[in-house]
Image (tube, rainbow, N blue to C red):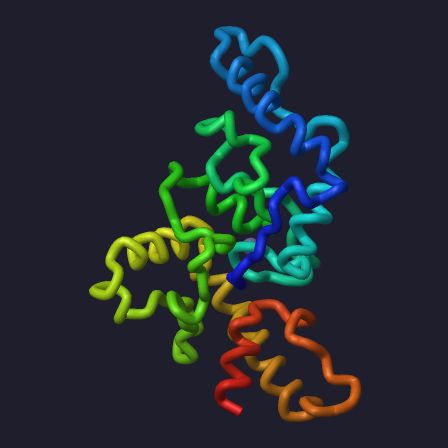
Length: 215
Ligand SMILES: [Zn+2]
């Protein structure tokens, strides 16, 4: 749920194959989906780009899930999520801006629902603190109530984001609550010590920010 600053694809040497081919690959995938017998080239990450792509995407989030900010992925597989699903938007199947480092829980939740426009964490104007807050009473992530009138379309997109990626499913509320307790203990005992860990060492970095605000 952190803001993602995504560089232009052209600036990433390791992904030059993707930069050169993403449009063609998308067209080929669309032809495959459109053909009656699913002839042609079906879905796969082409020319071994998966490893480099995952590395570039996970570097952008310091290996946190782009959507829930989970980290590390000890309880989840790493995946690359198509923000716009590849079967509905085949031309975007290899498009850099459509691809996000993602945990498999977020991916599974997103796959349950038809696509709907949500906020995107790599959008220029995205800022967690201006859209969401964590309610320390029930540990749900909520959309700022003031946004409902101030920017109704953003409010709806933010609500859609929470639902789409299952941000408030019970297992996550439990993890968030436990992480907050651990983080609080850490702050009490170690904060300011020479071996102080940094923000990116923790999952759900908005909890870290919240504790900094409260301290
Ligand atoms: Zn996730």
